[in-house]
Length: 129
Image 1 (cartoon, rainbow, N blue to C red):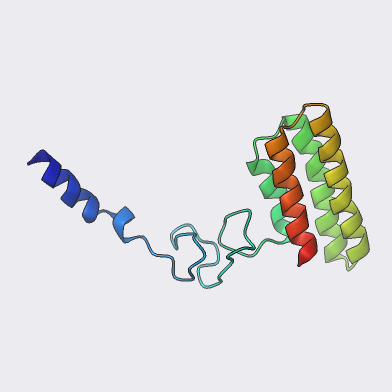
Image 2 (cartoon, rainbow, N blue to C red):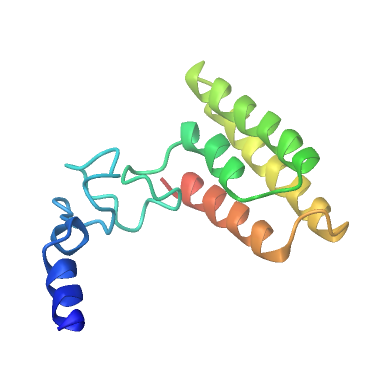
């Protein structure tokens, strides 16, 4: 009897009825862009196509060493600011510089190989757009 109540309770819970209107794998209740399909372009996993404005919060979500995060965020902000000012080349320079710094931090074992890979994947996705 207890099992039947548990099963029925789950069947009627909100988790069982979660929706993903745009089909990008991010449920509508947490999807910042519920009408935009960001499949394949959303490493930040907020439901929106990743942009330079997502780079800083993405870095902050990786659990980096605080000093490493501070340095990389400087490059992320500079890249976003350059793009906003219409300087795409300067923005790309800052993005690639952030990868170089991340590589040095990984060589120094300040960040993990997984974190370095995540940073490189995000920058590659931004540059490919």
